[in-house]
Amino acid sequence: MKRLTGKQLLIIGISLGIALIVGGGYLFYARVYGNAAKINLYQTAVPSYEWQDIAADNNIVSDYLWSRTKKLMLSDGGILIPSSYMIEGRLVTQEAEVSEVYDLSDQALLLKCYVRAGDRLAATTLKNEVIKQFKTYNGTYLSTVGADVDYSTISDNVEWLDAYLEYYSLYGTSSDYEEIQQLTAALFDDNGELIPESLTVAKYVDTLYVSTDDHGDEGEEDSSLEQIYGAFVGEEDLEAVDRDDPETEITGVKISDIDLMLIYNLEQNGLIAGGSYDNALATVKGAVCGGGIPYYAYAYQNTASGINYIYSGTENAAISMTETIKTMKNLAEMNELDAASYNELRNLIMNTGFIYMYYYITTGNYSENIAYDAYVDAMQIAFLKGDTDLYDTICNRIGMRVATKSTSPALYMVFREEDGRYVFYASDNLGVRLAVG
Image 1 (cartoon, rainbow, N blue to C red):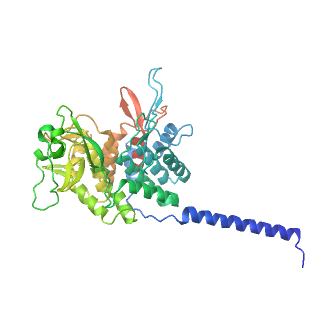
Image 2: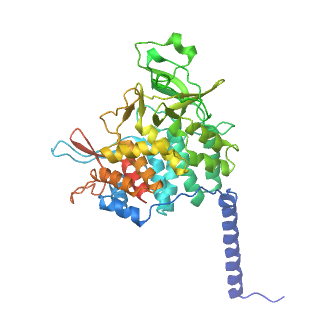
């Protein structure tokens, strides 16, 4: 038998090594990626240069805003983004302050920003850190970490699930799919409906009522003002009501939490029951207040006699504009927004330039305080409706709160003025980044 030369042995050794590496790599890929189910997501339009130019004309330059937000709020190697950053004040004693609270909803926005920027490493690092810091024993996630009181809401978990799906569609592994399955099971019941949670609502004691859903039935009259005045409290709770307490606890689902696009994506990919989207759409459309009020209810409850809508949230006899505009955005994403609702919102913004915190049911007036949290959702609605005039007006209002001083550490970022100090919220800046594209 012919003896192998040293060179031949070397070649054989290298070949075996390559085979082991390739084989091991294949096994790793098959285990991590090969078993990951494919997810297809509903595609919506993204802002083109025309829309970005409108924003830029109003001081909103998306790339600059994104770059400065990362530099200011993710400094020193930070992975999670804090809820806010307050820059130094005019006085020597007014030092910069970084919030010690980290909101799950902000991490969801940040994850979407990374995914859309194609930054896989940053997205994966963030996702892993959120699982490590926020995940609870039952598969849901805490709404905040770093606060004295830990709590979990459906709203924040829905937003994280939506962002996680977007991440998974590009970069997800089999373990990510298992995480998504677990969170979905914790949020939705067997019928594909969001699981009710405890909600605090204002009550108007003199008009406590049970309002059965009649919306959508032709020939039926809309709810009267008397019916929709105040918050719902079940009949069985009437005797226990403390009339000196302005609030009460109910078990229900916030209408704004019904993320129609998310529910559509979950259903289409077999993660929740068939028919879930149609049922959710009917529930949201049925939440229009009626009585000449084209805004949407705060929450709903399923009862033996039908759906009970709760029209007021934390403010007595008032519609939360932040909540109703979020609901309108959810509808607009699926091209299902009611024309009357859109026109009411459009007229408000075009005529006043502002979005107010509350709409009072009995007077038809708005509160004086501004709903800053609603501007990004309104901006997205304007884009989805193809309304450049409304988009420009909203950008103009947001642009007035963009830092333009060249020496500012927050140059190009969106601020709010609070007690004479300038505060930069992660939700404002990341939300605007996503809305502009």
